[in-house]
Image 1 (cartoon, rainbow, N blue to C red):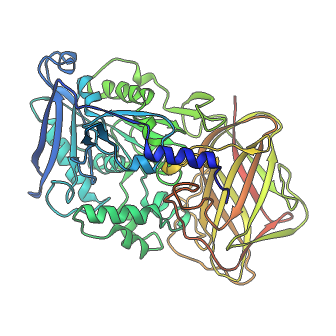
Image 2: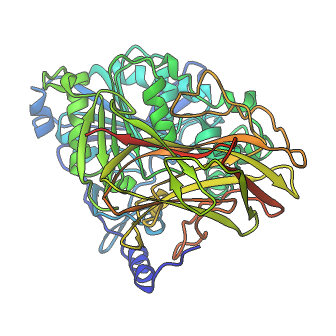
Image 3: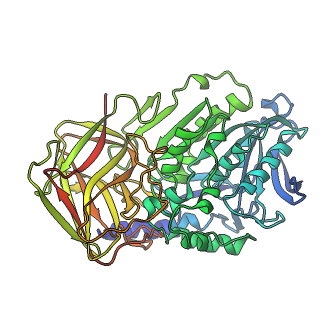
Length: 561
């Protein structure tokens, strides 16, 4: 594992002590109503805070003194957990000290964790409604996280908001992470007053996207998040404990997934290339699988929260909501569905490209074959050979030198024939790095980690079966319904889905594929990727079979100009 430099550690310590967050005082010209009771269909009282333009305020004048559209979010993080006032200003959420952001962030003191800023939206002529989900904050009842019940409660909250005298009857949903997950559940219930959703980075398949990507158990962030939510709310079950006891994808997992095909409202979804450990896959799946005829995906590879609260993203969100919630003829319906941020380095994008679909038209899938000399070539070897790595601490690396500058836009796939020695199952991690002038190019990653690889994918080798309905020619999807342990000497064809990215390669660059069992980075806040942690293999070896009749390839998406 590569260690961070002393300068990187020093920057990290400074960021923890002084995160780049500016919190402004509560705004004027706002009517703030706290803990409004709203009765759900079964009699349970849910509660919300509502912020709306005061008479004669800029937001009120923008709407001509009439009713206003509603921006809404609902979550389990306590709507009243706002930045704390201290003599020298306001303290940000502790997450900002742990999860570094590469750019400064500004929001008001009424902004909850990962939610829309009431000061920003009310001044633009919107009401903002922030709700506690059942069992959390001041809402009554006992909640079941990621459940259909949450969607039904959210439906009832939306219908209450859409029928208030100060509302124009159009409700839009906005928020990050769980504030995006809850949107999918709500939209699948099809509430009549829901006019548009903007899930800004949110997984849609809790098994494949987060808890067990590739069938590989996550027990870092999930364990921490599970303990926090258990302590902070009243729930019917311990979500993390349930996940630990269910290694295969069964009906319990399926009941925690929204029915994407039932979502038919206009959607602007944020697809982050930097949040591979949490929300990337699910965001692209939402764009692919919802039934909405009007849907857009806005990609980036920046910090999660600095992008969400940044000027460009907020301007995009506003244009989208103005069109669908306020009826503005602003040309949004002419915007191409896919916005692609192409990165050459981990800094600002080298190019923003618009496309009609994802992956974009013109992508050619090029197979790079693994050779016993450690090279990746477009021509496979005709001789049979094999290579192995020890699962506890070994790896294999293969390199391809870029002859002509190109863009890789889309997911990658690793296909190979493998066998196991000394074990019947193992974790296989395939990671792709960009090396320029002999130095690895770092990219923004999950949890504020600024030294990530281009992309990677996991696979639990005993999960062999592919899902024929969900798989595409460019993205394999496994059923994860059963484990099929390897027999001694058995050679099995496997396929690993690597997460989507948009990366510019220059002539002379080197693309490096690494195969291993252990996770790439240490689990600490200074030199590693806290709190990421995955189940790995500590016994036996994994053998890769190359050349001849054996397939061993990395398929990359080379985009046209």
